[in-house]
Image 1: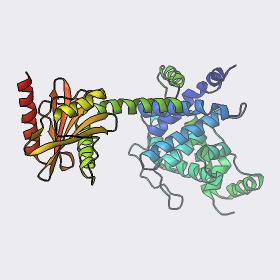
Image 2: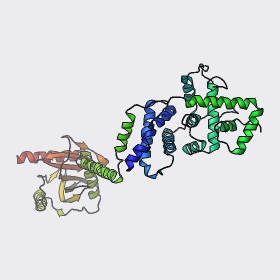
Image 3: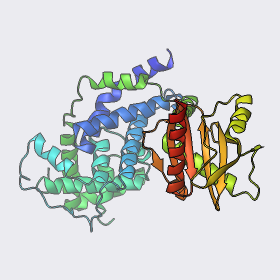
Image 4: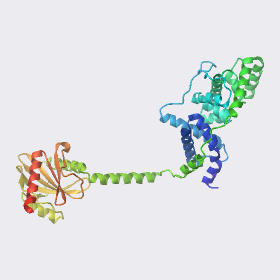
Length: 164
Length: 236
């Protein structure tokens, strides 16, 4: 199997998951496509350095995160994050907080600051471990735990109470 | 253990080591608030896992494959493209009248700023000067011996950035004027007149050849233009 065939067989199948996360990061189909295209382009260029047999899914998500961060850097701004005082959420709940369909949770997720949103998506939607998330985001495991905790706290608040 | 909501999150995710896990478990038995948080996070997690992801356009995979096949520009290709661009720019600049005017104005100033004029042939006779150029393969147009009080004193070839031009020197009354026989193509309008660096440059087309007049005063340049024109009127 040559390099192109390996890339096709190992990397391309993750396109859907990458797009799903990219869409939740950007909240825009066009930007999500750009993000995915650039992610695969970088992955393809660096594919020789990727150690076969290791976790290609986590590697692709790491590239996705870097592409996103670079885009922010180019735009001279960083992903929006808020520091919570104590344990309480810092954003007001949406008016339809009592809704219980999938739409409300998507909306609540979209309303999270990007740093928390990405951590929650990687953990709860994509089911990465804390170690994998720490590598993807390039932060310590303690930070991963803190972002997931705060992200979920904000989500619970947005959904109208301590229980989702 | 006191309440530590972040550890409860780590506990829900099975991310704690054995000791921390045991400590949180013991705390949960005693703390309804943390128990509530753990249950709430588990329920939230289930709902998030059940979310359907956004579907990409069916054409996205093909679009990605297409982009992967477009080879990135190699260093040598970038170098070649840059070199070709510079060559085109040079060729364009070479035939551009403002560029040529700038070169002639600079050369005029350079030659006349020397203590001794760097002529190769000293003569006030236009025919002798024309013969000297002809022996070296350059046909210069018929030029006046004098105009506007300035007289022919000599000539030489001068190197410009990209070509060698025939340069005829005129001087008198403390003023100087140059007539240049410019080989090659130059694009300019009939009324081309510019003053780069404070010198007056007039480009003319004489018998299909480009002639440049450079002086310090517009009157001197105009006088030589009239003289050249009348010379050609007489010849015709």
